[in-house]
Image (cartoon, rainbow, N blue to C red; front, side, top):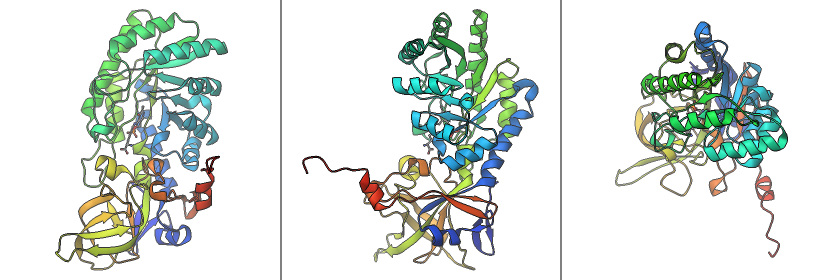
Length: 426
Ligand code: LLP
């Protein structure tokens, strides 16, 4: 459920008309609903809490990569969310938004020495180590600082899942994590290394997962590994089960509910006497955000081939269709009574054919100047934006109960150019 609703033939976000926002901030822009953000976080947290006997008091660390806007992070931080981060920049964002260091998880396939040092200084909750050379570097950096680095080993459970090959991370051929046997060896070695504090294991097998089966299989592998480590007399106090739960992108397979997910977790890995960590991203923010864009014009081919709805948003604003053939529902912001439906190729102004949001999409007949909203764009939307074709990054607006605030400005051209000092010889 989300708080983007049609009222009197118009799309609103929590008591704010999207058409009013378009007039105030210009298009294209992203808009997020605080109520939806909070609701999704609470639904997930409460679903886990219903199994407190098996799962204790888990850490729900929002995957910052899905939406790293500082006000979005601050909204979640106030509800008690932690942060799953993958770069120094994301750790800095989480801290700035009010997430305490001891609720920050630092994941990522290639962390630099500087980033590892920064994470230790920030006092992060844990570093999710993804490879042996990383563990070697971490041990050295922690020793130099005279601290013990708290870490878990990310295991590649050889179970991949997800909405697209490019967002599957748990398969044997994927770059993430170490295999099970190596994880056991690294863990035992680390336990004997004074500058390392092995705490447990982590996995994350993919994103936009709509079937609990692969998650259950992966978690079963994790349970077996925890038991084997303990069998060797090693202490295990944390189990990070990643994110990945899918969301309904309108016409696609319904994802499992947070309640069904939590019940499966409790059944599969509950009662292990560890602190469970979860890293949901998409399911918290996807349906809490939309991208609003204006129709520049509509043009067709005399031979009747295609009808192009040319928008002022493009692939640089919302990459997912170009990159993953992702489907986003597109809705008119003002619904015209009795409008007939027509098939449009919905495209942006960027100079490549990949800048196509959808082919042959049935939409109510549109006209120049109309506003449309790309639904479920709150996750992996603004964060993946670029300034390709020197199109300024789309601004972001956060709404809360009839109030709204621009939480990222559209940069001016001067700001864009100021980042590019002229070469000394020019
Ligand atoms: N934890 C780790 C280690 C991850 O790699 C990811 C996502 C998450 C948590 C959060 O997963 P979520 O709950 O959001 O599924 N740009 C792509 C999605 C890439 C996801 C990568 N990892 C997209 O637009 O679909």
